[in-house]
Structures are given as C-alpha cells and as structure tokens.
Length: 422
Image (cartoon, rainbow, N blue to C red; front, side):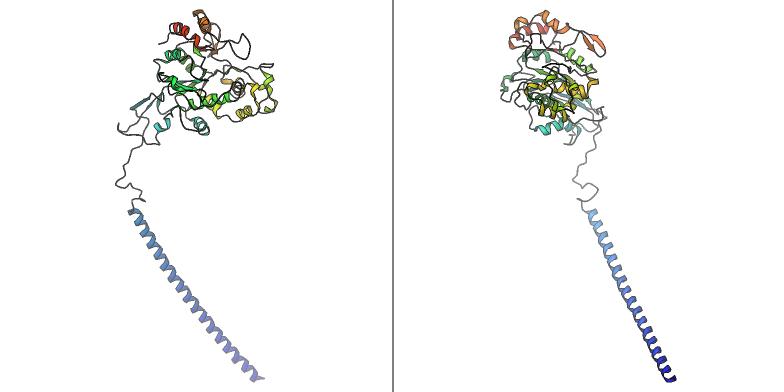
C-alpha cells in the first residue's frame, strides 16, 4: 500500500515537471512570434514613411502638382468692379454698359468674366426654346448692379411680315440710340430683305414660329419675344406692338412715362357673356376658377420683374395650352388672368395702346389716310383721363392701332410736328 503511494507521488512529480517545461516552451514561442512581428512592423513603418516622404518631395518638385505657378504661367490680377475706367457700346446688340476695373487698359476679360455674362446674343441666335427660356428666367437677387447701366425700353413687334409703318418708327427712334432695343417676331416665311435699308429694324428679327389668330401660338409668340428681350439685362420695360401700331408721343415722353411708372399696364376685366366668362373651361379648376377668369387687350406694357415671371410660368401656361382652344382666344385671357391672380397689386388694370372697338366684330376699326387728321391724333393723345402714379392725368395712351400703310403719308406729315419727333 505504501509502495503504491510512492509510485503515484513519483508519477505526479514527473507530470508537474513536464507541465512546467511545456509552459516554458510556450513562453519562448510567444516571445519569438512577438519579436518577429515587432520587427516586421518596424520595417514596414520605416518603408511607408520613407515612401511618403519621397512622394511629397516629388510632388513638390513636379510643376503640374505644385501649389505655386510654374515659370510659364502668367498670373492675371482679379478684376475689381468698384474701380472704373472702361465704357463699351455695342451698336448691333443695342446695349450700353459701363464696367469698372483696376487692371491695365490692354487687359482682356477672360471668358468667365462679367462682361462675358452681360454679352447680348444677336437677335437671331441658335438657342432652342428650352435654352432660351432658361437663360431668360435668370434674375439676380442683388438688385444693385456692380456696373453702370442705362435702362432701356424693349419694343417688341409681333407681326405677320414687315413693320408696315417702319418709316414713322424710324423717325421716332432717331437720336435715341442706347435707350431702346427692338425685337421683331414675323412669320417664319417672311423675307427680311425689306429691312436692308433700315437703320433700326435690320437684324432685329428673332427666331420665330407660325402664329394663328386666336390660338395658343399667339401667347407662345408673346412669351418668345419677352424671352429674347430679357437676354439684355439693360431692358427694364417691355412693350408689345403690332405692325399696325403707331406712337402717339415722341420717344422722350414715352420713355419717361414708362420708366417712372410704379405699375405695369395689363388690362384685366371680369366680363360676363360670350366674350368673357363663357370662354372659360371648367377643367381649368381648381388652378383657375371662374371667378378668376379675366379678359383684356393683348397689347401690354410691363416691367422686368413681371416679364421674368411670365417666361418662367409653367402651371398657368400649361393649363391654357391644354384647355384654351381656338374659340377661347387665349391672347385675350392668359396674361390678364395670370396677372390678376398672381401680380394684381402691381398692375394698373389698363393698357397704354388705344384701340377703337366701337364698330363691333372680332377685330377693331382700321384707319386709313382720310382718318389721320390733327384733331383725330390729338383726341387719341389727350381725349381721356386716367390715373398715373396716384394722380389723375389726361395722358392715358402712348400708342394706338390699327393703322394701315394707306395712313403712312398722313402720319409722316402730321406726326413729327405734332409729336415733336427729334
């Protein structure tokens, strides 16, 4: 029994010795692995640092990656628009802008300079309508311009062919260059060579499309004229005219009247019956309700704020295109309805274009040479009363229609003296 106990004690001692040796072996194994790993880590760290350092040196030495300009790079100082010296007048584009800069006179603005932004496309350009209306809808949120600008009136002629009374308008515009812009929207088939000798209408035709009376193509053409006129930032007032329109006052009077006005001139009336509410399509509801339906003269005079909103309008314009069919006569309702709903506080609810509807029918009275007398023209000029900037005045119409070529001789005889052209 004692013998067995001694044998078990010896076996236990051997087992403990073997276990101690195993722990010692494991310790040396782990120590070796740790040392090997530490050596690899230190080696890799050194290599990465060396690579990074060399890479940074190479970058610094490479001119294409350097923060400093290479020897061949010519540095141009930034343009400061607060210091003046350059004035430019572009006759073809009819703009008058003065830009200040502190750089040498020989310095040319780069393609991304302010002058490039203000550059006006020629009347006949290659923009499609999506591009045109996007460009025209741009409106600076800062109203004070960093350059000197002479505000202009955009005279927009919506015609079938030529401006029939062009010789009269030539006399009207003469001597007032830089204060106006002209845009003509004729039929696409119109032969423009008729303006070859014209000083003001030559080259002022815009890209146009066919227009039919009473259809939505009429308001499309109006918006197209506005969009083209908005490309010139100096255009601040916009007047829609036809080939049958005439001015009733000289340029200075009309320019001053428009520029000093605190309101826009869009006629918008709620008229019952077949020429008013009967034209309303109930499918326009709820965007346009019957109580909001308005009728007015097509011929408007508006400011830049409203012009930008008109070319930017999608919901109301789309509604008219979809539901205002030919008998609706969209040009008599689209703008009056839009303005009465969205911009009524700024509107005078009258047009500055005199028209005679006393004879009834779908079209106004047309005047020939026998109708053009001093008394007749004076009646158009001062024969009514209205409100202008909160005060009563007898100057209520600046333009009149509808005059044919037969009236031109009489107008050329009386108008320059009566209206004091030039």
